[in-house]
Length: 433
Image (tube, rainbow, N blue to C red):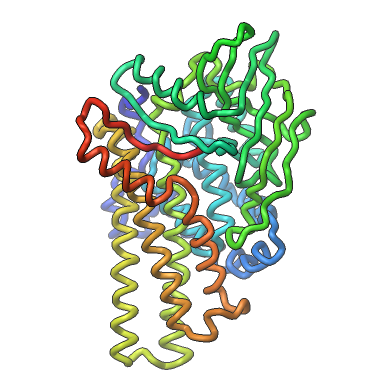
């Protein structure tokens, strides 16, 4: 299990710099730039991606030009060291800031960044260096995990036997297979709701490795390049919200992937024992949080400046309630991020982090739904107009609130952890990936 203390990537003297802004770190300067550029450039275009149901490719090109693609990349590969595998708190800051200006951009970027984190954690050094360089050069990545028979991944970390049991459980439901052949693998299967898929240049696939004799060997990650024969992006994404995430289906029909492009071939099932398992939910919760921030700020400005109702005690009460919900959601989000930071340093249990991440995901969704729904209501008729962003904020949060792990499954899992004998407790990581 990779939970040994990591090379320090968080900015030194973080607390001190708060009182001396003239000595901002590179991370802090870039965060300020992201916030400013997001307001001036991304926010005005956010409606466009929604209406056109289109991936925000122009935003990614700008992020590459500004060097923002370095954000989740570790410093050993020339990055800023703010990914989930380096500095989860800072990663939440960046994803939240982007999502506040454009939810589609925040979601697609956090998917891209999570792929980078998985590559740096699971790939060989040569693979990691090569794939990260391609990413920094502008290659768009997506992660293909969810399948028609959506499965529940469970984390068991006490022994290799339990890891094997976990792999056997998920393999029964997984329908994407990588069959070992000379020089590589042949991959077949179908993936659903794959964000970034329309624009992706690289597809990081979750597949069950099968030997030439038909024996299951565990979970691996073939990296399929756009244009490879047998790979098809099926145009299926026409959703109520998050329309710019390009979350189309993938059809993978006997695609050949050379050994050098198969992540985890040297150690199948490494994902299950990686400290990253479950951390994806923290990044996705940051997207909801950023959208809730945007909705709340729009509401406050509208009430105080447009309808001049800032001195109405009823309105003050309602907005006070929303601020309490928003701050509560933010508090649990940053607690989850800090727990992952401690896990990276070997100071907390990744299993507990995974369980708390699922709770965080649900809590932030619930808070964001309340904030966006109430903001729409309090703005009255204007809230439902497409010329205003509130209905888009609500649709984006509502559309992704059904993404797994669902609230119901998370509550059952939490209850089982509390009530079931410790020997049989399993922590929910995700449904799909």
